[in-house]
Amino acid sequence: MNMIFLGAPGAGKGTQAEVVCKELNIPAISTGNMLREAVKNSTEAGLKAKSYMDAGELVPDEVVIGILKDRIAQPDAQNGFILDGFPRTVQQAEALESMGVEIDKVIEIDVPDDAIIARMSGRRVCEGCGNSYHIEYKPTKVEGICDACGAKVVQRIDDKPETVLARLKTYHEKTAPLKDYYEKRGKLVTVKGQNEIAETSRLTLAAIKGE
Ligand code: ADP
Ligand code: ZN
Image (cartoon, rainbow, N blue to C red):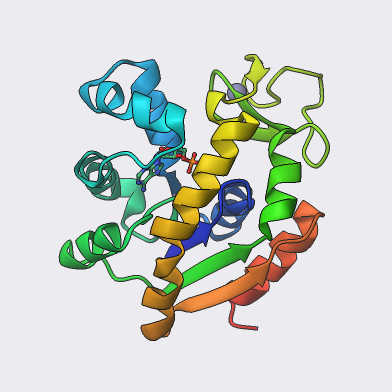
């Protein structure tokens, strides 16, 4: 099953993608994580992406589409995958179609803007493996240290309040039109994001199973 997880920054689509991919044993492919990795390693794509990411803007389509195309060609993606954070523009959705990628379901995690803004200040990410946490909703076992790899857990540069507002604006302008795009194709399922991560996961899995 090929799925897309759609939602505003901080709506929890990444967290849900991680839960569901373990449940279904398919990879969660996060373009945000791949781009952060590329920036860290100063690859060509990373160098192009950094200034956009820091400002809360979208990285140009050709950079992201290139990265995504390579990733879904990998052996582990042949039995299905969850795309987390891609597509983010109608052009990217069209690019997926022209690559011949069939999408079975698009899960939108819907969280109102005011709740997003309140959540974002608590978000943390591991410098080592990219795992994400939240000081309130998904804390690390040891404060400031990643459960998975032991590296330091920090706030993302683009999680500063002013950048969060820019990212929300970008989401509404460029990404939210994808709801219509996939609705028209009969693929969209909306899940209301809950404060309890486990509760959202329950609703998300039910939506995937068509319940
Ligand atoms: P969030 O969903 O919390 O905003 P992501 O980790 O998905 O965070 O993305 C972080 C940043 O990476 C985005 O603000 C954007 O600059 C860039 N990015 C990620 N995916 C894409 C994409 N599909 N197209 C363009 N830019 C992207
Ligand atoms: Zn880690």
